[in-house]
Length: 343
Image (cartoon, rainbow, N blue to C red):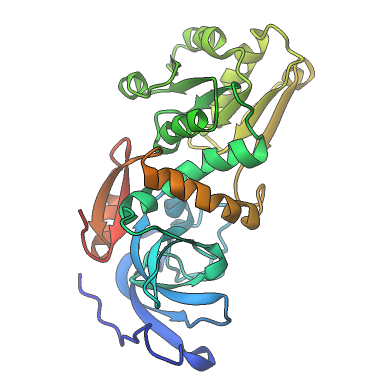
Protein backbone atom coordinates (compact mmCIF):
# COMPACT_ATOMS: atom_id res chain seq x y z
CA UNK A 1 0.00 0.00 0.00
CA UNK A 2 1.23 3.51 -0.82
CA UNK A 3 0.94 6.33 1.69
CA UNK A 4 1.33 9.89 0.41
CA UNK A 5 1.89 12.70 2.90
CA UNK A 6 2.66 16.37 2.86
CA UNK A 7 6.07 15.46 4.24
CA UNK A 8 7.73 17.86 6.66
CA UNK A 9 11.32 16.88 7.30
CA UNK A 10 12.27 16.48 10.95
CA UNK A 11 15.58 18.10 10.08
CA UNK A 12 14.08 21.53 9.37
CA UNK A 13 14.83 24.39 11.76
CA UNK A 14 13.12 25.80 13.71
CA UNK A 15 11.50 22.55 14.74
CA UNK A 16 7.79 22.88 14.03
CA UNK A 17 7.16 26.11 15.98
CA UNK A 18 3.73 27.12 17.19
CA UNK A 19 2.31 23.63 17.67
CA UNK A 20 2.08 22.93 13.94
CA UNK A 21 0.81 19.45 13.14
CA UNK A 22 3.15 17.10 11.31
CA UNK A 23 2.14 14.35 8.93
CA UNK A 24 3.65 10.93 8.49
CA UNK A 25 2.76 7.49 7.21
CA UNK A 26 1.60 5.25 10.02
CA UNK A 27 -0.48 2.27 11.10
CA UNK A 28 -3.75 4.02 11.90
CA UNK A 29 -6.55 2.51 13.99
CA UNK A 30 -9.87 4.12 13.07
CA UNK A 31 -12.06 1.35 14.48
CA UNK A 32 -11.42 -1.12 17.29
CA UNK A 33 -13.07 -3.76 15.10
CA UNK A 34 -10.62 -3.44 12.20
CA UNK A 35 -6.85 -3.91 11.87
CA UNK A 36 -4.73 -0.78 11.49
CA UNK A 37 -4.39 0.64 7.99
CA UNK A 38 -1.24 2.17 6.53
CA UNK A 39 -2.17 5.76 5.79
CA UNK A 40 -1.30 9.39 6.47
CA UNK A 41 -1.66 10.60 10.05
CA UNK A 42 -1.35 14.05 11.58
CA UNK A 43 0.50 14.19 14.86
CA UNK A 44 1.55 17.07 17.09
CA UNK A 45 4.92 18.72 16.78
CA UNK A 46 7.17 18.65 19.85
CA UNK A 47 5.55 20.76 22.54
CA UNK A 48 8.48 21.26 24.92
CA UNK A 49 12.26 20.71 25.17
CA UNK A 50 11.75 17.15 26.46
CA UNK A 51 10.04 16.05 23.23
CA UNK A 52 11.72 15.29 19.92
CA UNK A 53 10.97 13.79 16.52
CA UNK A 54 12.55 10.48 15.62
CA UNK A 55 12.59 8.48 12.42
CA UNK A 56 11.33 5.06 13.49
CA UNK A 57 13.66 2.23 12.49
CA UNK A 58 11.87 -0.74 14.10
CA UNK A 59 8.91 -1.40 16.38
CA UNK A 60 7.62 -4.64 17.87
CA UNK A 61 4.13 -6.07 17.32
CA UNK A 62 3.67 -7.14 20.96
CA UNK A 63 0.48 -8.62 22.49
CA UNK A 64 0.23 -5.40 24.51
CA UNK A 65 0.13 -3.47 21.22
CA UNK A 66 -2.68 -5.66 19.91
CA UNK A 67 -4.77 -5.26 23.07
CA UNK A 68 -4.30 -1.50 23.01
CA UNK A 69 -5.29 -1.27 19.35
CA UNK A 70 -8.48 -3.23 20.07
CA UNK A 71 -9.40 -0.99 23.03
CA UNK A 72 -9.21 -3.95 25.44
CA UNK A 73 -6.15 -2.94 27.46
CA UNK A 74 -6.89 -1.45 30.87
CA UNK A 75 -4.95 1.71 29.95
CA UNK A 76 -7.01 2.34 26.80
CA UNK A 77 -8.67 5.77 26.60
CA UNK A 78 -11.04 4.78 23.80
CA UNK A 79 -9.92 7.74 21.66
CA UNK A 80 -9.77 7.24 17.90
CA UNK A 81 -8.06 7.51 15.52
CA UNK A 82 -4.84 6.31 17.12
CA UNK A 83 -1.41 5.02 16.15
CA UNK A 84 -0.52 1.85 18.10
CA UNK A 85 2.91 0.89 19.33
CA UNK A 86 4.40 1.10 22.80
CA UNK A 87 8.14 1.19 22.07
CA UNK A 88 10.68 1.08 19.31
CA UNK A 89 14.05 2.10 17.98
CA UNK A 90 14.45 5.45 16.26
CA UNK A 91 17.00 7.91 14.91
CA UNK A 92 17.05 11.43 16.30
CA UNK A 93 17.58 14.60 14.27
CA UNK A 94 21.20 14.55 15.46
CA UNK A 95 21.66 11.05 14.05
CA UNK A 96 21.70 9.14 17.36
CA UNK A 97 19.97 5.75 17.44
CA UNK A 98 17.88 5.30 20.57
CA UNK A 99 15.47 2.85 22.11
CA UNK A 100 12.33 4.66 23.25
CA UNK A 101 9.22 3.93 25.28
CA UNK A 102 6.16 5.63 23.81
CA UNK A 103 4.35 8.24 25.90
CA UNK A 104 0.66 7.45 26.50
CA UNK A 105 -0.21 11.04 25.57
CA UNK A 106 1.58 10.90 22.20
CA UNK A 107 1.03 8.81 19.04
CA UNK A 108 2.53 5.32 19.17
CA UNK A 109 5.61 3.93 17.51
CA UNK A 110 4.05 2.27 14.44
CA UNK A 111 4.83 5.17 12.15
CA UNK A 112 7.65 6.31 9.92
CA UNK A 113 8.15 9.23 12.29
CA UNK A 114 6.85 9.94 15.76
CA UNK A 115 7.37 12.25 18.72
CA UNK A 116 9.09 10.82 21.79
CA UNK A 117 9.76 11.98 25.32
CA UNK A 118 13.55 12.14 25.41
CA UNK A 119 13.50 11.20 29.10
CA UNK A 120 12.16 7.80 27.99
CA UNK A 121 15.01 7.08 25.58
CA UNK A 122 18.25 5.14 25.85
CA UNK A 123 21.11 5.61 23.35
CA UNK A 124 22.16 2.41 21.56
CA UNK A 125 25.80 1.59 20.82
CA UNK A 126 26.96 1.59 17.21
CA UNK A 127 26.22 -1.70 15.51
CA UNK A 128 23.30 -2.63 17.74
CA UNK A 129 20.76 -4.94 16.09
CA UNK A 130 17.76 -2.59 16.12
CA UNK A 131 15.31 -5.37 15.20
CA UNK A 132 16.46 -7.52 18.12
CA UNK A 133 16.12 -4.60 20.55
CA UNK A 134 12.66 -3.70 19.23
CA UNK A 135 11.56 -7.32 19.56
CA UNK A 136 13.08 -8.20 22.92
CA UNK A 137 12.76 -5.17 25.19
CA UNK A 138 9.02 -5.40 25.89
CA UNK A 139 8.72 -9.14 26.58
CA UNK A 140 11.95 -9.18 28.58
CA UNK A 141 10.99 -6.09 30.58
CA UNK A 142 8.11 -7.86 32.34
CA UNK A 143 10.33 -10.41 34.09
CA UNK A 144 13.24 -7.99 34.45
CA UNK A 145 11.19 -5.39 36.34
CA UNK A 146 9.31 -8.05 38.32
CA UNK A 147 12.55 -9.54 39.64
CA UNK A 148 14.34 -6.22 40.19
CA UNK A 149 11.55 -3.90 41.31
CA UNK A 150 8.46 -5.80 42.47
CA UNK A 151 10.13 -8.64 44.38
CA UNK A 152 13.91 -8.27 44.01
CA UNK A 153 15.31 -11.74 43.56
CA UNK A 154 18.07 -12.90 45.91
CA UNK A 155 20.92 -15.05 44.59
CA UNK A 156 20.01 -18.72 44.59
CA UNK A 157 16.25 -18.30 44.90
CA UNK A 158 14.05 -20.50 42.73
CA UNK A 159 11.47 -19.32 40.19
CA UNK A 160 8.43 -20.88 38.53
CA UNK A 161 7.43 -19.35 35.20
CA UNK A 162 3.74 -20.08 34.62
CA UNK A 163 3.16 -19.70 30.89
CA UNK A 164 6.76 -20.41 29.94
CA UNK A 165 6.07 -21.40 26.34
CA UNK A 166 5.01 -17.91 25.20
CA UNK A 167 7.57 -15.34 24.06
CA UNK A 168 7.60 -13.43 27.35
CA UNK A 169 7.67 -16.67 29.34
CA UNK A 170 10.65 -17.99 27.41
CA UNK A 171 12.50 -14.75 28.00
CA UNK A 172 11.54 -14.85 31.69
CA UNK A 173 13.58 -18.03 32.03
CA UNK A 174 16.60 -16.26 30.51
CA UNK A 175 16.08 -13.22 32.74
CA UNK A 176 15.66 -15.27 35.93
CA UNK A 177 18.92 -17.11 35.30
CA UNK A 178 20.72 -13.88 34.44
CA UNK A 179 19.56 -12.25 37.67
CA UNK A 180 20.79 -15.08 39.84
CA UNK A 181 18.04 -17.69 40.14
CA UNK A 182 19.38 -20.96 41.47
CA UNK A 183 16.62 -23.09 39.93
CA UNK A 184 14.06 -22.25 37.26
CA UNK A 185 10.94 -24.30 36.52
CA UNK A 186 8.95 -23.70 33.34
CA UNK A 187 5.27 -24.63 33.05
CA UNK A 188 3.18 -24.43 29.89
CA UNK A 189 0.94 -26.29 27.48
CA UNK A 190 3.24 -26.73 24.48
CA UNK A 191 5.20 -29.90 25.26
CA UNK A 192 7.55 -29.46 22.29
CA UNK A 193 8.51 -25.95 23.37
CA UNK A 194 8.87 -27.02 27.00
CA UNK A 195 11.53 -29.53 26.01
CA UNK A 196 13.73 -26.81 24.54
CA UNK A 197 13.39 -24.11 27.19
CA UNK A 198 16.60 -24.86 29.03
CA UNK A 199 14.83 -24.80 32.40
CA UNK A 200 15.97 -26.98 35.30
CA UNK A 201 12.56 -28.68 35.29
CA UNK A 202 9.35 -28.40 33.29
CA UNK A 203 5.69 -29.08 33.96
CA UNK A 204 3.17 -29.74 31.22
CA UNK A 205 -0.14 -27.99 31.87
CA UNK A 206 -2.58 -30.57 30.50
CA UNK A 207 -6.31 -31.18 30.62
CA UNK A 208 -5.66 -33.87 33.24
CA UNK A 209 -6.06 -31.70 36.35
CA UNK A 210 -4.82 -34.38 38.72
CA UNK A 211 -1.66 -35.14 36.78
CA UNK A 212 -0.89 -31.44 36.35
CA UNK A 213 -1.37 -30.77 40.07
CA UNK A 214 0.90 -33.67 40.97
CA UNK A 215 3.61 -32.50 38.59
CA UNK A 216 3.48 -28.94 39.94
CA UNK A 217 3.68 -30.22 43.50
CA UNK A 218 6.68 -32.40 42.65
CA UNK A 219 8.69 -29.89 40.63
CA UNK A 220 7.75 -26.47 42.01
CA UNK A 221 6.42 -26.76 45.58
CA UNK A 222 9.54 -25.14 47.07
CA UNK A 223 9.95 -22.21 44.66
CA UNK A 224 10.35 -18.73 46.09
CA UNK A 225 8.74 -16.74 43.29
CA UNK A 226 6.16 -17.33 40.57
CA UNK A 227 6.08 -15.24 37.40
CA UNK A 228 2.52 -15.73 36.17
CA UNK A 229 1.77 -14.93 32.52
CA UNK A 230 -1.50 -16.93 32.48
CA UNK A 231 -3.82 -16.05 35.39
CA UNK A 232 -7.33 -17.45 34.96
CA UNK A 233 -8.08 -21.11 35.68
CA UNK A 234 -4.46 -22.35 35.31
CA UNK A 235 -3.24 -19.98 38.03
CA UNK A 236 -6.03 -20.90 40.40
CA UNK A 237 -5.43 -24.61 39.76
CA UNK A 238 -1.69 -24.23 40.39
CA UNK A 239 -1.85 -22.34 43.69
CA UNK A 240 -3.49 -25.05 45.80
CA UNK A 241 -1.16 -27.99 44.96
CA UNK A 242 1.91 -25.77 45.22
CA UNK A 243 0.98 -24.50 48.67
CA UNK A 244 -0.19 -27.86 50.01
CA UNK A 245 3.08 -29.50 49.04
CA UNK A 246 5.38 -26.90 50.62
CA UNK A 247 7.45 -28.22 53.50
CA UNK A 248 6.94 -24.95 55.36
CA UNK A 249 3.78 -23.10 54.42
CA UNK A 250 4.82 -20.08 56.47
CA UNK A 251 7.76 -19.49 54.13
CA UNK A 252 6.76 -16.74 51.71
CA UNK A 253 5.69 -17.58 48.17
CA UNK A 254 5.66 -14.38 46.09
CA UNK A 255 3.22 -14.68 43.21
CA UNK A 256 3.77 -11.93 40.61
CA UNK A 257 0.84 -11.58 38.22
CA UNK A 258 2.08 -10.29 34.83
CA UNK A 259 -0.22 -11.51 32.05
CA UNK A 260 -3.73 -12.89 31.72
CA UNK A 261 -3.78 -14.87 28.48
CA UNK A 262 -5.81 -17.64 30.18
CA UNK A 263 -8.42 -15.29 31.65
CA UNK A 264 -8.84 -11.96 33.47
CA UNK A 265 -10.18 -13.42 36.73
CA UNK A 266 -9.65 -16.36 39.06
CA UNK A 267 -11.74 -18.11 41.69
CA UNK A 268 -9.58 -18.44 44.79
CA UNK A 269 -10.72 -20.15 48.02
CA UNK A 270 -10.08 -17.95 51.04
CA UNK A 271 -8.36 -20.82 52.82
CA UNK A 272 -5.49 -20.54 50.32
CA UNK A 273 -4.63 -17.12 51.75
CA UNK A 274 -5.14 -18.15 55.37
CA UNK A 275 -3.28 -21.43 55.35
CA UNK A 276 -0.04 -20.30 53.73
CA UNK A 277 2.16 -17.25 53.31
CA UNK A 278 1.04 -16.44 49.78
CA UNK A 279 1.75 -12.89 48.63
CA UNK A 280 0.09 -11.86 45.36
CA UNK A 281 0.97 -8.68 43.52
CA UNK A 282 0.90 -7.44 39.97
CA UNK A 283 3.54 -6.10 37.63
CA UNK A 284 2.55 -3.59 34.97
CA UNK A 285 1.63 0.00 34.21
CA UNK A 286 0.59 1.56 37.50
CA UNK A 287 2.12 -1.12 39.71
CA UNK A 288 5.55 0.19 38.76
CA UNK A 289 6.22 3.86 38.09
CA UNK A 290 7.32 5.08 34.68
CA UNK A 291 10.48 6.41 36.30
CA UNK A 292 11.33 2.96 37.68
CA UNK A 293 10.82 1.37 34.26
CA UNK A 294 13.02 3.96 32.59
CA UNK A 295 15.76 3.46 35.17
CA UNK A 296 15.89 -0.23 34.22
CA UNK A 297 16.19 0.38 30.47
CA UNK A 298 19.99 0.86 30.13
CA UNK A 299 20.85 -2.39 31.90
CA UNK A 300 18.33 -4.36 29.87
CA UNK A 301 19.51 -2.78 26.61
CA UNK A 302 23.04 -3.89 27.49
CA UNK A 303 21.94 -7.50 28.12
CA UNK A 304 20.01 -7.69 24.85
CA UNK A 305 22.80 -5.99 22.91
CA UNK A 306 25.29 -8.52 24.26
CA UNK A 307 23.08 -11.44 23.20
CA UNK A 308 22.60 -12.71 26.75
CA UNK A 309 18.85 -12.14 26.28
CA UNK A 310 17.57 -13.02 22.82
CA UNK A 311 14.42 -13.76 20.86
CA UNK A 312 13.69 -15.03 17.35
CA UNK A 313 12.30 -12.33 15.06
CA UNK A 314 10.33 -11.89 11.86
CA UNK A 315 10.67 -8.56 10.06
CA UNK A 316 7.82 -7.10 8.00
CA UNK A 317 7.23 -3.76 6.30
CA UNK A 318 5.19 -1.17 8.16
CA UNK A 319 3.26 -0.65 4.92
CA UNK A 320 2.00 -4.24 5.20
CA UNK A 321 0.63 -3.81 8.73
CA UNK A 322 -2.98 -4.59 7.79
CA UNK A 323 -2.01 -7.98 6.36
CA UNK A 324 0.51 -8.79 9.07
CA UNK A 325 -1.99 -7.90 11.82
CA UNK A 326 -4.39 -10.66 10.80
CA UNK A 327 -1.76 -13.39 10.44
CA UNK A 328 -1.26 -15.82 13.35
CA UNK A 329 1.83 -15.31 15.45
CA UNK A 330 4.54 -17.93 14.99
CA UNK A 331 5.33 -19.55 18.35
CA UNK A 332 8.55 -18.23 19.80
CA UNK A 333 8.91 -15.48 17.19
CA UNK A 334 8.23 -11.76 17.66
CA UNK A 335 7.16 -9.73 14.62
CA UNK A 336 8.93 -6.40 14.08
CA UNK A 337 7.72 -3.71 11.68
CA UNK A 338 10.14 -1.45 9.84
CA UNK A 339 9.74 1.24 7.16
CA UNK A 340 11.60 -1.18 4.90
CA UNK A 341 12.58 -4.83 5.44
CA UNK A 342 15.87 -5.22 7.24
CA UNK A 343 17.83 -8.48 7.50
